[in-house]
Image (cartoon, rainbow, N blue to C red; front, side, top):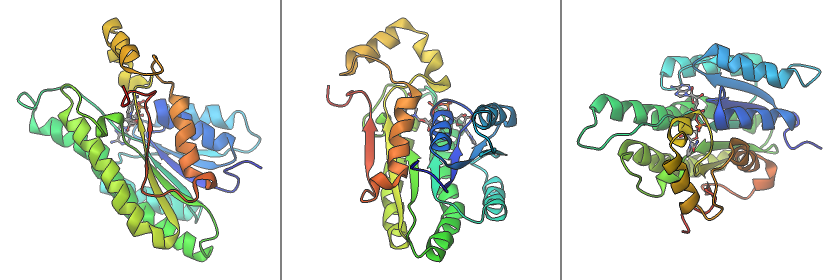
Length: 259
Ligand code: NAI
């Protein structure tokens, strides 16, 4: 039996990288997946890929900016009207940038905090009640889970990413607060903290051979990760296999932090 049969899932930032691979994995294991992101064409490419390999379409696209409350409210209404249920939410949308504290414009600070932290708050505030209602109707017998994508940078300082690392530390701790608040409704909340994975977010940096060599040197497994190696851990945290896990952060960093 597939782990996500009869499951309705939302994945944000599903148009590329880790979000794309997560959506593909959940769908291949039986879920109906709503792909959320700002660019319709990117989402449609992923949805076509997923739907092309199954008999009935299981992937739907919902273009939205997850930093905007009105967009997130519309997403909530769409889920209620189209599905009337929600089991899994993966808050994966995120952004990064490089700047020292002294050089950083306040607008850049806000952009990163809003994309990485406010979005997780908004999605939890709007989709949380949809999950709670469904959970109560099903007498908490079904698996329901939220997985927030944090980062290795939420655990350690990195050069010239004070906005990014502080935002990801916030995601890890927000996850714990939400886990406490949602536990009585039978909804588990965990975070996954990737190390370096090869995605559009890291593509520019990885063009620099010295940067890639530094990752290899600093990582116990001596290599950059693949997005599907992060997606598989997100899927685990979202599945019934992780039924006794809530408020945890799963570090998937190839052994960077232990070196
Ligand atoms: P990516 O750039 O491929 O994915 C991020 C996705 O989020 C993109 O599709 C982007 O369009 C979307 N997004 C950004 N702002 C948005 C907004 N306001 N509304 C809706 N969608 C928005 O990069 P990647 O690597 O797949 O990133 C996924 C998550 O993993 C991010 O949260 C990132 O911080 C995290 N992460 C990635 C690491 C890596 O090495 N690739 C390492 C640690 C964490």
